[in-house]
View 1 (tube, rainbow, N blue to C red):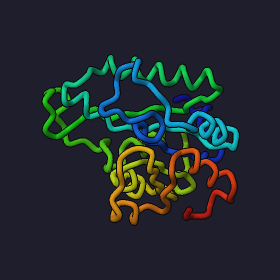
View 2: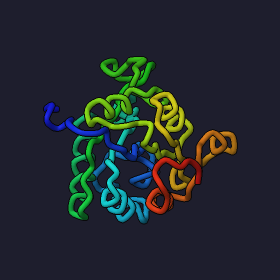
View 3: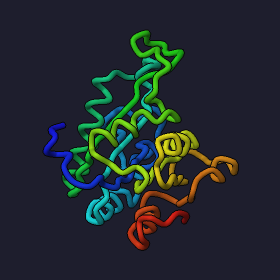
Length: 199
């Protein structure tokens, strides 16, 4: 990224898991025909963007490592998602993914990496590339690993939603807040000062 794009104060961002937060999680989603947004998500993203939040997707994609779909399949799905959001006036600032697994069926992706959540690599990369203030940012996911990645990266608030993966009580307890879905997260962020924590 050119240096001129990094000039200015660090920005705040909403760092978003994909499956279960933005798109409906059918299990290893990769076919364009299965692309469906969680209800309320598009308007939530639009509102967050209008409110000055950068929008960054950080998604584990172990289906690549498991041989269930290819990088090309992932790229086509991502392009379709970006296009659909763009048509609704939403621009994602970045979409980062991790294709790795330590015991991957596909040897090329057999790696104990620093990008697969709960490791913070994708979040830290986004912060470097986009000049983000992670302490003023929010991580929104549907699994404990999302919260753990946010904590490890120094994200100010780590929230979970109930629109994807079922949450156990001990998982919910480790989040700063638990919301029904991204729309509820957006309502919370847009109705209070950005430095406050909690639901």
